[in-house]
Length: 435
Image (cartoon, rainbow, N blue to C red; front, side, top):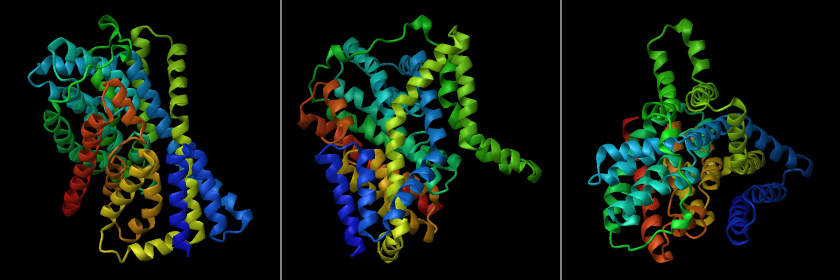
């Protein structure tokens, strides 16, 4: 009976979000409260479970997401992302333009949220298309594949960052393994797959091209690359330090390796290098940071809502029941996590919702089977990107900017996202043979 309630809750969640277009945070709250009451949790304890789940989830991840958003917004506003992309394209030439854009998308995607990176890079894609008379979709897909992989696989993006905390994984290890999986994934979904799209004819809409930062106001390429990649570099260094320092220094190393500390350091460097050094006042930089918080507020609410549903399942004892059934399944936890996230993604459209819902369901099983936590994060991340279609805002963003039919959008964008998801799973399963 309890499993039927969980199934009903998930179906209700999908219907509220996908059919009735209810805000995901509100949908999580309604479903969580309803499921708690039906599962027999005393009414006065239902809200305690909801609030505890929300507090536990947001308490461990809010600073990471907000600091990451601030750094990403600064990189976008300063022209650093534009500098990175144009620098890579200049050095590779038109012949290798797809490879250049894929690399640019992946690097820019590390600090930037997907939507921000998409809108920011559209002018570069269109300028290349118009100047060299190239097929827009075939040229644009590699860069968007790079952005998508970074968003789904790598911290400090919301879903992977929160899953790292939820599964108690190492941030540095997750980034290293994520990059190992990301490289072949971007190559397959980007430069290689995009060559099959050259026959898609379209004229991107000029009206959708946002203003670009003048060249003379951009930071240098070296500064742009340094600030964009600094969080990753610091996480990697922090992960390697325990192997080279004495035991007496481990508490200090552990403190410096905390994601919040790493992002604070990166933000401080970025504030000076991309802001104060370029003549911006501290007040104007703080305004940029304030705007970035507004952009991630809804994401934080969705994450909190997902945490409340997870806690209801835990307090009701259903998670233990589910674990008991799944642990006897022939499917390994890594594959199950990917499959659950993929199904929710296809049904709901939101990668963030898919990732957190899947994590709440699979977490007890992952703990009991001692599944590698970083690989679990990456498996769910890959599943959450599966087959974006008409219920995903990213689908319509791509369709409208490139002025495509729904058929051609499915053929290009949706298939690219599917390749990213499947290749990500394949990479996880291969690394699991080693680890």
